[in-house]
Length: 119
Length: 106
Image (tube, rainbow over all chains, first blue to last red; front, side, top):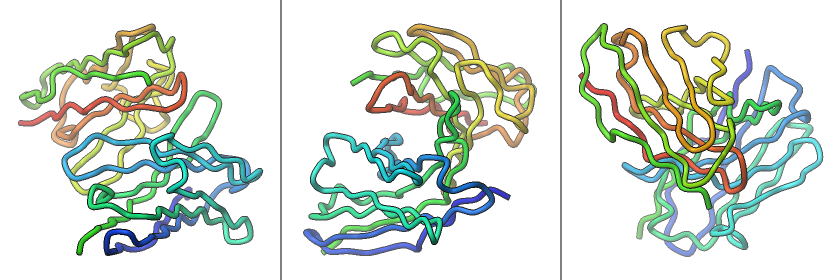
């Protein structure tokens, strides 16, 4: 079945970087974009941007510009989200989700990766 | 950025009740609205797209309506599995934005 499997929880100190992976299976990986969405404790979902798994094109939420990088490895059907210069307020669950297109946005989600920024 | 506002923030209901959640956009988004269900500690689940189209496999007791700036999600007869938080999301323009969520509680 179609699924997105994310890497495990991470703990980082302020100023460090974190890289989260999202491995896809069950569909033609390069045909769709992968979006990244985060959720801080008790907060609403926050869209961060996307990477097209085929072309590698990216789009980022302006507030993260310069601090976040999306990459992908087509041979491994895996997308990556790297966030640098971490702040305490980056503590959140980070989700990847597939954009099915044709007017159907985020139809399949990974289970989420908890990133904790703590000194 | 387009702001999405849901009401109410919390809704108390019983099994069998008809439940309606409202989502308002700060500017017109045509029909480019999705609804998700999220349970504690879980990823969101995709329910409805293009304001009123039901995703495959989602029970028919869920329905969506609206266009422009005002939208609703209706659960016709609330079931025990439906107690969760519901989010609307606009995808008319970037950045995509979500409502603050509506918690449906017993």
